[in-house]
Structures are given as structure tokens and as C-alpha cells.
Amino acid sequence: MMTGTNLLVVPYRGGGPALNDLVAGQVQVYIGPASASIHLVKAGSARILAVTTSQRSDVLPGVPAGAEFLPGYEASTFFGVGAPRDTPTKVVDALNTQINAALDDPRIRTRLAELGSVALPGSPADFGKLIAAETGKWGDVISRAGIKSN
Image (cartoon, rainbow, N blue to C red; front, side, top):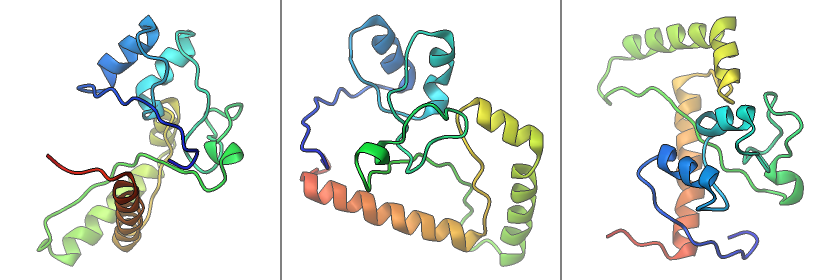
């Protein structure tokens, strides 16, 4: 949308089938998490043209970030842990402490890096701010693109 490029979106039931078609030459571009495709890059079956994060990846330092040639572009995938709204604060805080400790473990960080990912430790409030910011950003994209639910 930022470039005015009109791509034909081909819906797939997951990254596996999409990546199979990419390697087979049935589609020309796959946009998805590095963790799904990094094994193909390492095997030489595919190449990454850019990462969609705002800065270059430590795992793929030779690959430019999209923001380098399209200022302001950023489209990251993130995973988080949630709990029901009425979960006691004491339980949420204990879980958060343990999750942050795990994310600080060098073995976990190394494994995440092998998958093209980075740890993003923080507080429940930090995660809430991230979700709010992403909801606002993608809500704007949906609105500007005129996307409607079925």
C-alpha cells in the first residue's frame, strides 16, 4: 500500500504449502515470518530479499530491512503469552517473571536466533502497548485497503 504496488494475494492454508509453491516457482514472492523460511535460505532453495522489521536482523545482517528503501515500513510478527482477563495479578506477574527469565537464557536466545527470531522480554503493560499499537496500525491498513469481513 505504501508503494502503490498491486500484488495478487494467494491465500494458503499455512506457510508450508506457500513455501512449497515458492520453491517450485509457482509463486514469485512469499511474505511471512523468517522462522518459516530460514531453513530454505540456509539450504539455498530460496533467498530473502528483505526483512520486514524496521532494522536489519542480527541473524541475517547482510539482508536489508524494508525500512531502508521504504522509510516507515515495518511489519513484524510476534508471539506472546496471554491469560484470561480475571487472572490474578500475582499469577500474571509470576508468569511474566518466569517467561522473561527463560527469554534471557542463552540457549533460548540462540535457538530463537537460529529460527530468525529475537526475544522481546517485557512487562504485561509493555505487551499491552504493543498489542494496542499493532491493532491501531493494522486497523488503519484494513480501513485504507477497504477490506471487509465475510
